[in-house]
Length: 425
Ligand code: AMP
Ligand code: GLY
Image (cartoon, rainbow, N blue to C red):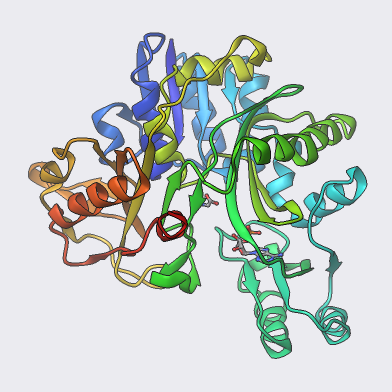
């Protein structure tokens, strides 16, 4: 079959890499892709958010199956539009994507269907939001309601930071209309995990869990990013915890969405906070995590394309996934300045030496091909150096060996990816 992957990140390179291995895949395209995805897929110059352009290309090229990577085209209705012209798609409808597109919608759904999450209130004007903060003693988290590329969440240490966050989102409108509403919620302590499941409208098939590193600096310091590194499995999600998450969060969520007339079909990514009392839902994403997807794909033994197609066709009962019993870890290399202002166009050398290390895959994110076979940085997060190993420590050692082989003075990475798992021993 002819497959099109939509997106340009490390996640999409990893999805292409896994799909290309499937015997069911006869031709693979990626829109718009990056310099790494180009090694396994034909990159097409259509932006992931150009819904009309993607549909036009898919029709013209007679694509059989579209796999959508990022959330923005899903929120904009790409899956609905492809379905409407008879093209199969892995990705949720716009009405289901609201789980990620509106934090208010997600929190209200949790309240209605008894899904454990932090206490919250929603506000549409700053004075009332500030009063809420005055009334609350404990720490709060202020969130822009809409999409903000992972940057619309401000964890506040005191009331002044809370006021500043409200001003930033609602008055300065740092995230535009995504900040028309804010959700203010109770701060939760515990250990975070990224939990993934394929959902076919009715059934859910858990994938493996991962842990992300959102802050830009070592020791989880500095502003939040899209994710600076990740590994799987997540030791905090053992078999018993996986079952609790499935029973207490995923099942009521799928059931709630079906009852609301918004059946969920696609990958469900639950951001969890776990403490002694159990798991609580921090957020829902309607897509694979980036960079979590990269180590997930390294550990997947089964045919990804077969599983995604069965999910899209409501046949998940036919799928049993096999995972390697090892660990995989990704270190993200970003352009100096990220998540703030950064320059594009610096040359990255020696990628072949990094990729030649046994058990290492170099997934590209913001890269583009320069002249004469050069690779140029073209974004904030640029590379996902991913390694497999028997333990987190072994995978991490290999990943950093590969990072050190890359010659890119304008890049940087965190040096402590995996610390939590390694500290656990
Ligand atoms: P979100 O995009 O909603 O997952 O938030 C981004 C990050 O902010 C999460 O990964 C957490 O590290 C942190 N966060 C969000 N909500 C809370 C909360 N209620 N308590 C503590 N930390 C939170
Ligand atoms: N790495 C977290 C995310 O994809 O949202």
